[in-house]
Image (cartoon, rainbow, N blue to C red; front, side, top):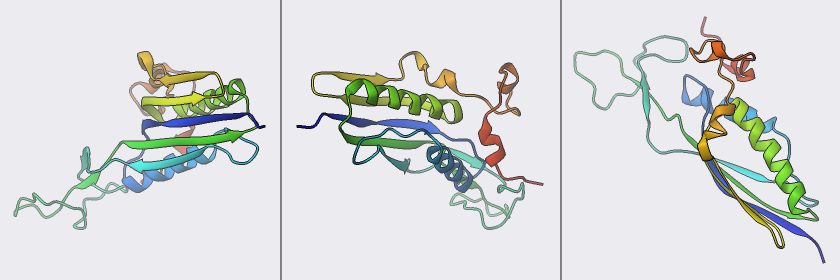
Length: 176
């Protein structure tokens, strides 16, 4: 008989980026470089869901230009250009059924994974359950512990207070 552990839950994140494409590129690149949460047959699955709608706007594209191909359903007839609609929030769904893994090993691997994620991508809400044969833990972002791990970029007003800069900066497109 095999030993099994399970992970199920969601994590709400805010990746850096000036456009939807840049945000998704940075998020996907970070996820591709995180340590694995493993099982003998299959590793942890991560599904990325962009929240519906938008929660921010920009009057220019990723190159700093106001163009006539930006959306604006509420456009003033006197305005020539529209707005770039952006959704800053993504939901990560984590799921795994790990054969031949003890609870402690899965918990350790997941903690390493989420800690590295939180350093690179701003983590808001966390609700993840890890359970084994006779153990279970519910991981939450209590007291914004994961939010406080985020390493701000050098150009951020908050970034000047930290020793290191977020390595996602080099992933952002040069707008010159």
